[in-house]
Image (cartoon, rainbow, N blue to C red):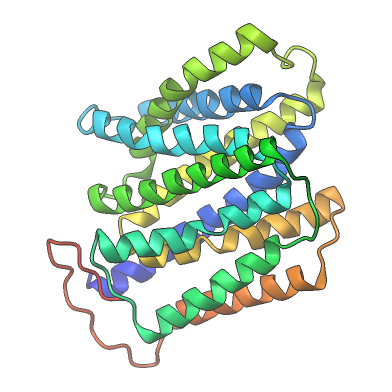
Length: 309
């Protein structure tokens, strides 16, 4: 399979992962109405780790080789990214948090250019600008809380963005076999180990609400677990084939799906600017995924991971 065909084969997995993470955002909002951030963090990461470890073991795909490296990657996502994200979103407005999270594709692309030495074609660069503009519009709402606590929340969300961008670059650099189930199982395990001290400290000082949430609350938490597990597997399957810069841009689908699910299930009413932003994101994805009538054969990907877009 040449490089061009390899990229095209990985894009559906990354688009599915982005869509699942968009749904997960809405479900997480529902869950956080009845549980504390530490509660959700413990359930979503440990639950995903258990689910993926058992599934990989039953299917004979769980391998010890490379497990330490995958656990270190898991310290970034889901570990630190989920930890900083949950703490930050608990202190700032959802719209501000979403706007800050929209910076992730840009940071991922910049890191891909600098660290992996990938290149952007004119079409890809145009799609990047249009997609980032759309992400900003989707996240835009006027007003919101202010103060020291909000500033701290914004800083924590930015740390989550940095962790997620570093994770994307690292997985693109080191994961090449596309065995998403095995990789995600060990990554979730590493993430669970990273957040254990925070969850333990939080429960020892403030307790937990997991014993009082009821059936609906537990269903929301378990839905977050399922989204995280499936989203992680599909991401790892796709990132082995798609350059990091392109993968970061495909992640722009997340705010679109998140907004749509919030409208349908939570009754949110997006503004005209948000609707325009969603249209811009979809337009950027169409531009990015457009297949030329006669695509030029792509050159093999060098060992330095310099990828032609």
